[in-house]
Length: 587
Image 1 (spheres, rainbow, N blue to C red):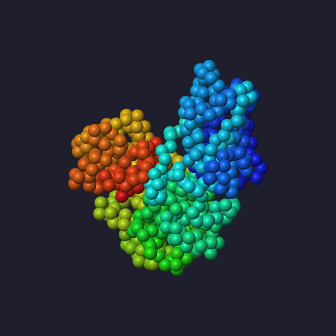
Image 2: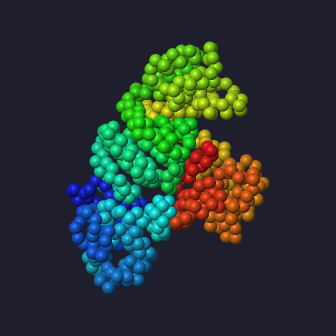
Image 3: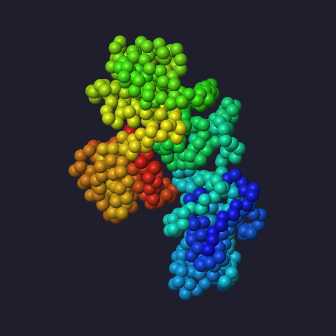
């Protein structure tokens, strides 16, 4: 038996739908085709069609372009009288074939429901002994994002509950047709006209009017503009398009901007992209420490936005970034230059505070590495003088010192500098990583030994390592899965199997930094448990992340009202969970 994939010539550049759900349907159709085909072939064909679907399906009839995904086989086929019931509880032909091949349960029923939610339908043509052909019709751009979480998008509609993923041994089909995991744009941006080498600005902003203003201004600066009105869509677009730069709001639906920034900066493929924060929320120092290139607080003038875009344009057009190293020990200076140096960074090294100030005023730098022990002034004094210069106020400063800091000194430095690295056996890797972050270096372009240094460093997340997390869940399978994940990041785990036990564990276990709270538990559910915890003064500010299997209208608000700091749905997206942990542990 052979398997073929045929893509019609002239397919559109992209398909705007829910990629996971589309793959779920196709994997199910392919799994069935392979199961009931002993010889011959199975074929998947993707093409643009102008007919074939039911005319009463408005989302297809009104669509400018309809795509057909046809899965055909040369298997045993299905008799005409079985066509109507086959989508209810699928068995091929009769009970004997079901016993021989194994039924697919509710697979086709689920697939049909998903097709409806995607704005399409599934049609069947088949005869016994001649094989079967299942065709999934989808609009290229589905306007009603009913498969999205409407409780987060603010539409007020209740989101239909989609079934869990269908089990299938097949990998996801590999198409050359891009499948965008987001709906069509509300604002007509440039996503269909992005070519290699274009200067592209991604705008992640839920205020439609402000997003339009940013898009127009970006085009005036010769950027092509992309717009995402939700954080999850913005994150998906950042990973697909790899924009030249990103303008990011902090108050967003689904995930806040801090979580988006964290996920961008922890993904090696997007870490180098300059992110400019534009938000009503105060957070200048924090955003710069997390790797943002700049920060503007709303309300903001047109002149300030224009300057921000000009600065971004100037930054991305400079292929070589400038680093200043301030270190009085010559051997250490040479070591740092050797560690950082590459074709994309020009490093200048000086040995005193006076030299550092003179050098900073003579040319533009993108980052400073500073030792605290200087011959003519302390590092604290040098930082204060740097920050007094308006042109240097946002210059990232990395403290790289062997000095043992007092608590007061560490607190002072955290207000003044982006990162503090105390010299030890792992400090060179951390220095390479932090300078790469603030210089916006493309990790894939680094020499192989330096890439390996960073990969080894990323195996331990400093923000998570050593932190104690309490997991409250009545399902031991969930506890085991979460424990396995978090222990890989050197976190210490304690757990409880119900709400009352969770409260007792929290009261009797010192040093718990964060709680993961399942919502659906018998007797005392997660809402009651979180409310009880919040009523205890000692836990008033303890971060708690609610975990729920639901994604319905009002769930997030209900969790927050009960005392949750944040919210994540099951099955848990591990990247999002780790990001939420980093964001809340940072605070």
